[in-house]
Length: 171
Image (cartoon, rainbow, N blue to C red; front, side):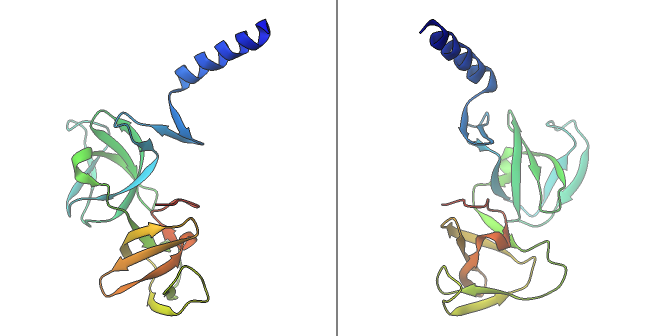
């Protein structure tokens, strides 16, 4: 009994040092939101800095509003982000939006079109075909399929064909 209480105290102390964990490999950041998580760029002009401060050098600038990025770290009002090509840097939180977007198969080497379906399965009618690297808002994901609603197209796509959502993620 005494060993069990001691083990519980050690485990409790370890959890306090490790910080709050909401799921495997997902912690709560200083914003109170999970880290890592996907968001999108709010503006057509977003400076990416070397560190979490306006005094830090701008290492590049995004010029594509709505592009999905992954928040990998938080420091006060700054967010460390990663894009689909693996580029990382710091941006001010107000330049990011909680609107979910995704890029269709950015890893594809060719221009093979990818089917969007009327329903969340391969057997449903094809509603559109999109090229790799197309960016679109994500309405919802059921853990296997996501519904995209872009300019001039909409439909369901296999979740594994997207960058901007996690495998098995539901929302």
